[in-house]
Image 1 (cartoon, rainbow, N blue to C red):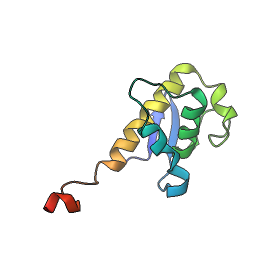
Image 2 (cartoon, rainbow, N blue to C red):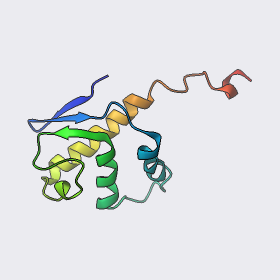
Image 3 (tube, rainbow, N blue to C red):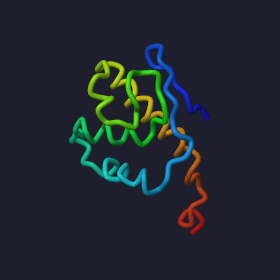
Length: 102
C-alpha cells in the first residue's frame, strides 16, 4: 500500500494508523446527503486526520496551513485522500461478513 503521494512536485505522506476516535468524524461525512458539499473547514478537518506530513508550507496538523494552499493543490490533496481511503478500505468485507454465510 502506498502511503506517499506526489502532488505538484511536493511529497505528501499519509498516516499508516488512524485511531478510531480520531477518524470517527469521517463517518459524519460518509452519511452526508449526496447533493450536499462539505464546508471548507469540514474538508480541512478530514484532511488533517489523514496527512502525516507534506512538503507544502506549514504544518498539515494546523488548519491555518490549508488556507494558503493553491486551490488545485487543495483539490488534488482531497482526491488523493479519497483514493487512499478506498485503498485502505478495499480489503474489508469481501464475503466474510456474518450475513454472507447465511
